[in-house]
Image (cartoon, rainbow, N blue to C red; front, side, top):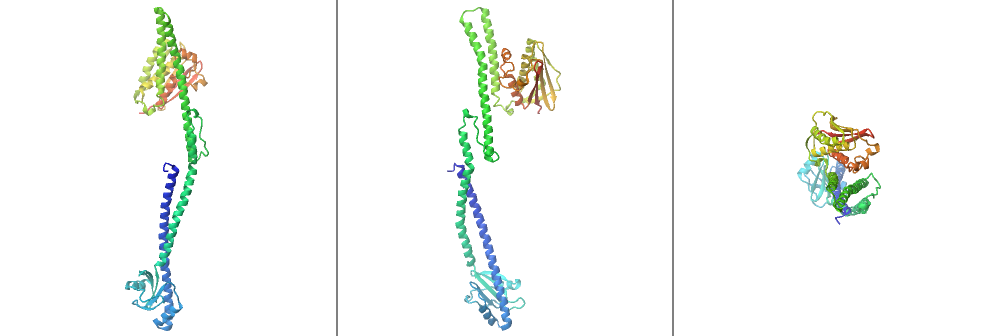
Length: 462
């Protein structure tokens, strides 16, 4: 039962409501008790003042305390109240018929308080008593009116019974309503759960139904749909990556196997064996290069920028070393490679090996697609708080359509030439990943037949 969110919400709601109702009932009860007592005191004081006024009038006519009392109590009736007139010492002179003996007794302090303040209220023998002087200027005695406290207790008792009966009923009805509302409110989530359970790797294109994108449940559905979109894209990318990787590995493996079978088919000369071994060596190197690139790209989903092995890196030295290494490839191709005058010393915190791999990939790409007699230049600049590595070439260039995909895995601008040059379409994809891992940005400016310019901007952070 407690595994259900509906049940837990209902219990929490019922608990909070119960505490609120109890607190409200107590507040009302004590407020009502205070009002009842206040009204009783006001009523008793008013009755005592009425008795005192009537008694003084009769006394002025009869000039007798006893006779005035008889006339007053004969004319006035006070049901359920005990009324009497006393002298200055509190001894009864006259009283209503329901007063027996000394049922209403007063102490000296109550009488003195009545003289000084015009009235006093005391509780004695289960009675609430109001005392008022008969006259403010003459000491004729006091009028006292008493009423049992049980009158108020009966009213409070009825109020308690009403609370004891009403609070559970209200709580029960409210809990039932709360359970219904919780069930209705959570129904969209239950529907989302059913829809999500039907989504599998084969149906990642399915999406949850969004009835109202502005409420909390709708925003949750939108978030889940966005997550499904990212998962679908990631899954599709993974599938394409596996397919492309398999395709790239198939060719060199087929060449290795075919050349080996041909070499073993019959006895050959030493020169023929050397040619076969040379071909096998070249294909093995290409295969190793592809596997190494795939291993680097396989780290991409796992390695966030914060997970890199960061250390102080001198960009001037890194670019200079990479240019010197690429100089061998440029000379072999008949391409002129030059390092332009560097700016002042530039350094950042990053992975030195990855940064060198990025620069070498850019230079290797430029050498591959620059014809003999062409030129390649490398420059290192400081621009707007960033270090910019600019690689320019006079190669074949890249069309505007291909520029949008040139950083995708296994994408080649000229597939036949790329394969002949040993490229697998992974170099620039690795470059972009390394740049993004260092929180940088890479841009390309290229014109077919006139060359390309790759600009890498890396933030200079201490």
